Structure formats: C-alpha cells, structure tokens
Image 1 (spheres, rainbow, N blue to C red):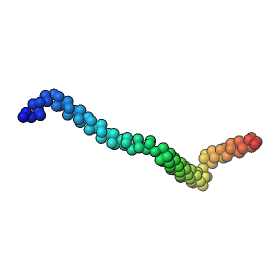
Image 2: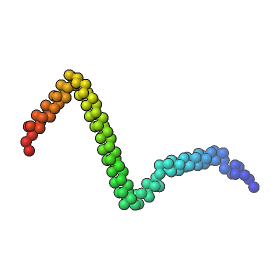
Image 3: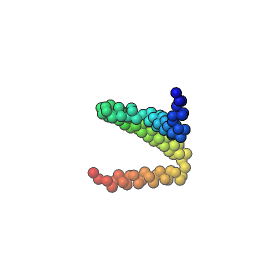
Image 4: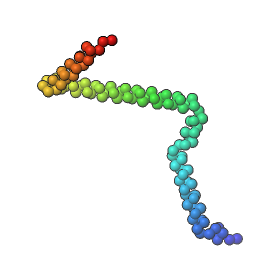
Length: 109
C-alpha cells in the first residue's frame, strides 16, 4: 500500500497545508472577535436594548463625575489665584464678571 506522500504530489500537499493554516488563523481571529456572541446578541433584541441602556447610563454618570472633578479643580485654582490678589488676574476676572452682568441685564424674559 503506497503511503500518502506518493499519492499526493508535494506541491498539492504544500497548498493544502497553506490552506489549512489560513483556515485555522481565520477561525482564531473570528473567535477573538467574538462574532458568535455578537450574532447571539442580535437574536435577543431585549438583551441588546438593556445592554445599550446600561452602557449609556454608565457613560453619562462617568461624564458627570469627570466634569464635576474638573470643575472643582478649576474653581479651586481660581480661588487660590484670587487669594493671591494678583492685579492682572483680578482685573481679568472682574472684566468677566462685568460682561456677564451686562448680558444678564440686557436679557428680558
């Protein structure tokens, strides 16, 4: 009985090995991309909606907390600068306050 190498020419066997390696690589990449989990999620629209609502709420809370820390830091820095009583920064802040007051006086609701 002839062995496998004598039945399949060397070049065809190499081609099969290349195709096999490419197929295995594509399967691994699809597994890493979690395509199967995504398609299962698409078959359950209620779960998809709930996950999107939950992620949106988490993003919103994260933005709110981040903005709060950012604004608190800016206010703290302005208070420190105001306590130093620097003439240039004090004049700049006074100009901003005057501009805001004028805008409030001009708006009649």
